Length: 369
Image 1 (cartoon, one colour):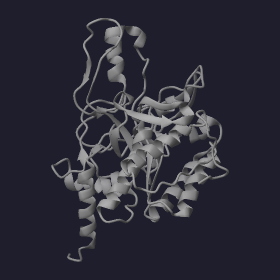
Image 2 (tube, helix red, strand yellow):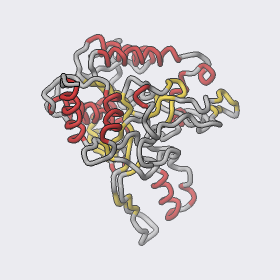
Image 3 (cartoon, rainbow, N blue to C red):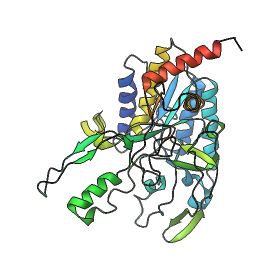
Image 4 (cartoon, rainbow, N blue to C red):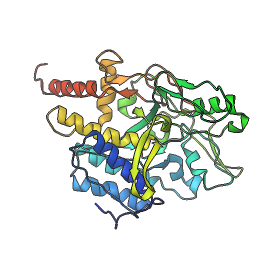
């Protein structure tokens, strides 16, 4: 579906992102009907795309892998107040939720410092303030986080007899584990070379904590002492101790070191070693279709209230839909028992999630007191 004339088809325009979205969601739900919405890479195009999808009301779930740092909508940072766009996104997501459409967004690939994504174009980058990604920050969308699955990595070059890097258990995705290994065995030239690659997560300083997160242990407030500084000039002191929306909500494997193949004609064909939370959002999209099928059809709606309710009911016991992630970090938030803004509630056990959804549906239809 072309919105506002549609987007360009090229590697520079990000066609690979579209390819991976289709491949990941369709790969998990191979018989699902897929509708692709594309729009120009502009602010109006991005917003119009969601309103078009909501207005059409054709899909049961959707995902998006695009985004940018939340603070890049703030007037003090960019010179004009674009927070109205955040409100516009929210209205579209509320309409999707009201129609029972599940929506998923990537939480970003710059760990707890999403504004770092904007550094590439500047010789004097923004300071590394703790920041989250939008639209994953929106309370009416499910934010997809990232982990690293167990892996053994071996250097192919010098020095000889270097021991392999072993990740023994699934952990929050942050490439500090890889950077530390490179520094130890290849030298200090790798210090800070990989910062802050990892799964996005943290606390919104725009959206207040939603009701579904209020009673979840581990939900954090924004940190003190965070300022957006550019070219030596302090642009904005971020709100300290703000009770904001925490993200991500749930996670799946996103580390390129334990990642995926991608087939993208515009990017040269079959590519290996890809990752990012851009892969997780469409995977959740496909999972949503599988769960709908498993329970006999029907839309699941916004996942978030359901997910946090399941955390209260099941915890991390044998029937839990969540695998607790208690190792690793995204350069700030550590993997600890329970919720944390690294892997969120944890990694999904999809079969148990489907069982919980089915049971939840039966409970809601039970007329007994």
